[in-house]
Image 1 (cartoon, rainbow, N blue to C red):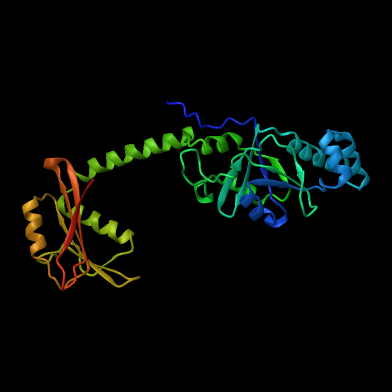
Image 2 (spheres, rainbow, N blue to C red):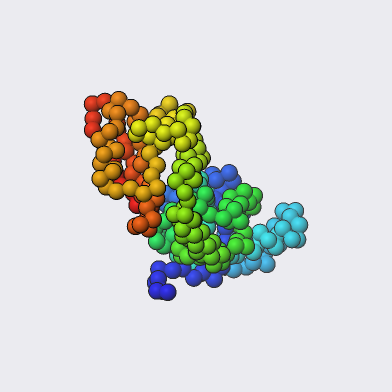
Length: 301
């Protein structure tokens, strides 16, 4: 495997919520920053954080009435943010997109509105993997996207390895196995299709169209001169007809195209399984309007 020098290798992965209800998301995205709360811009607290006086910071939360465990958690979250020098991968969600980035080495600065501090994300927030493929929720595991519902400010990501691999554009071993298995199934099914008798192949073609929402208007096997299946798509009223052949030639296809009724359906399909050439061909014809000539394309599988 070729090493991609753009691959990331963080020491840790953390999720961060950019303000209550995503209040700071737009600003953080536009400016390429992370805003952080906990009253960290308050003068006394900012001095404690900047000087690394974490015990005093924790004591301050206890004085405010926080429990010992909460005070410790708050202090640790703030410390992690202030002390990070670019070794942590920070992730969040901007709507349906995953955002990720690393903080640069510049120190935290108080926000102009007095609500917390901010730090710059090196190079700004990114929304694609290193290959340029979008990182949207529908393309990510639920174990990662569930973090969007996290109610706190920041937390460690328990699927850190998955997150890193996904950003690096790498497939999980189980996914690679599944893709290989699916490829093997496709190869096996193609071989089985070539063994079908003409009537069985015609039934298979009918089932494929039915699964796509098309309804047959005639009985399978009751052929007309230029079609085996007369179909309609109920949602649009579109008509289509299908000619099915166990084997065919280019000459036979040309005869079929010539015989098409110009005032007929708007879509046609010519399907054939040709064992002699060990391939299956689907010829799709479209734009069969009364004033135009048929347009067709060959799609070998």
